[in-house]
Length: 561
Image 1: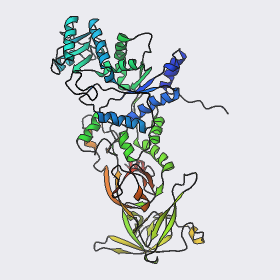
Image 2: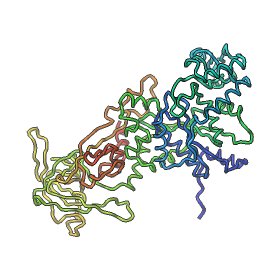
Image 3: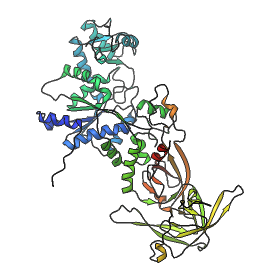
Image 4: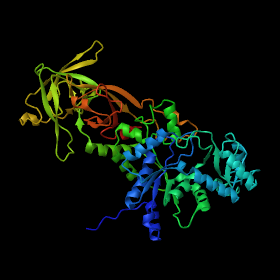
């Protein structure tokens, strides 16, 4: 049988072409370069899977590099969160690197550019510099400080470094071409003054390099062979290469930047600036709120690293941006959780059932299958007694023939237990049903081997024993935004589309085996969906987050609109 040939994406084709043209395979090196100014989100997960996946495929090292050039927005908390997320996704990096490791080298190179007449100190304010940039159809104009002498530029730049000037007094710009078609090439800023403590270098520096100056040079210093970034950086490639031209040694590997398209996710936003706003304005609890598209939020909600990697592989890499429906991510979660999660029973909206012909005070332990997907089936014991809880929606006093759950005069099977028949109800003064009184068939116990145990009835309900049930807080999540593309309407603030019903908290009753649940433990609540014990869950107060339902109920809702 012929071996299956893997279909390559366009990035893999680039690498394969480089190898065919003589690039040494042992010189391949990739990197994932996050800015530590927020938590990673599902878009970053695709980039992580791309770069570390290439490392695995080509048996090449992958660096984790933090592009930490802006101390105003960067924190050690974000560094640690990023490392935690990459490790949780199942990847290992070769070197942990920081752009701040290269601050001295970047400064020395900038001094050389000044000496060569390729950089100068501009003393204009930001508004004047922006105005002189021109437009895509109108060339820019030269700064009045563009022709400063080398000695004056060197003196000013050193004094900037030494902290002699206030922020905004001067910047260092590359001297390229103010009439260039690519506006990024119109004397881009390389350094700005910032009197801010850096999370690694402290107060050692009063000037900080701009991202465009730092990024490519960091790739070069680390000898990264292929630098992959998202499509918005395509116009930056020319500048990336110009900066490399100034320092490149032909005896070393020259990084090659190539771009791939973002994959936007429906019903959310993935801009770190906008995610930060959700946190700061209290729309969500924190960066790891289970409604957030952050990797830490998905982890807390109960997603598995396998499901996120599968999602990234499924959507693939492309050259054109498109919107991915969040239901695909949910499908990937559902598919993996189905294989690994134990089945348990929990009731979210309890209605008491009293089995009037079951002996009072009696409890029996019934056998329940943990997961039918297991190669070797395992079982647990579930207590059964006279009084139970079922879901309120699973009972109707009157119902048509298409209602296959419990109704007066009708029979259903209780999962792993007996067939019961509803005889009458007890109501309060307002007519709300408090209890359903039923009888049971004692010969119909599941697995007992009697003819009655295999008798077919159309409905099967989940339940918990009222006397043994454990109370739990359950958090039910909906889409964070009420529309698929909250950023599409440019005349409206994306916050206007926040779904006010994105979180519902209810008190549930779960079977006693869940009393031992630890934060991060995942389960399938039978007939309800997949749930994960929250990080706040304790032995005294169980808290579960709903990950996804058993099926895509949202597709039905959307189709009805």
